[in-house]
Image 1: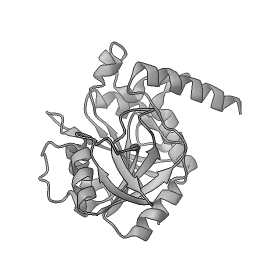
Image 2: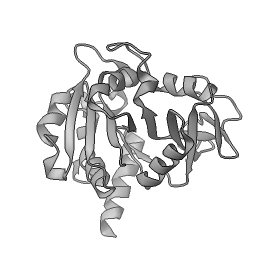
Image 3: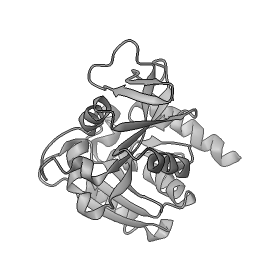
Image 4: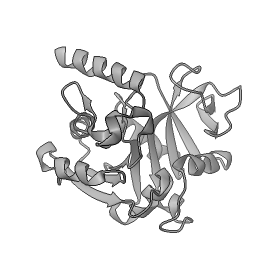
Length: 235
């Protein structure tokens, strides 16, 4: 079984202004094409074919460009936030009717050069309702927010990370749909709060990766992603 992918692409991207004043973050150009093209092509290379895009700010521009995903060999559907932004968690909750019992969650501003199939296999082996990929970070890329020890994810806490947290959320997770069903459709919440709640209940597995991630959430991250994709094309 290969899971579908839920991509969170609805944020306002205020840190990337003025670039994102007229386009959503997913359409920011990186190495000559919209960032989301890199993401979608990479998912297809990993034999992932079913994608749900949670869109909000200027989301119709993404839909106009990506369409049904056929040009990427994908089946792409859209779940718009509606009149107000629902937050990352609320957006996933709204999309549940389009998603299977379990699914990958990927941030719309991240590119993760790892083998998704190994992450999926680890998720099925744990029999827990959630899994988070984690990277030994030491505050290099951003503030470390995961306590991960001896292969076990003990706590994830984005809001109040403790000094003994050396790992960071890598940006790819897997959730069972049932983990979100306690929330009401249309409820505004952050997926980070759900991950935290799962972690302190011992219901969030951790999968350690060693490859760094690339993100376009900031101008410095955008520059690094540009370099990565230009170098990657030369290989």
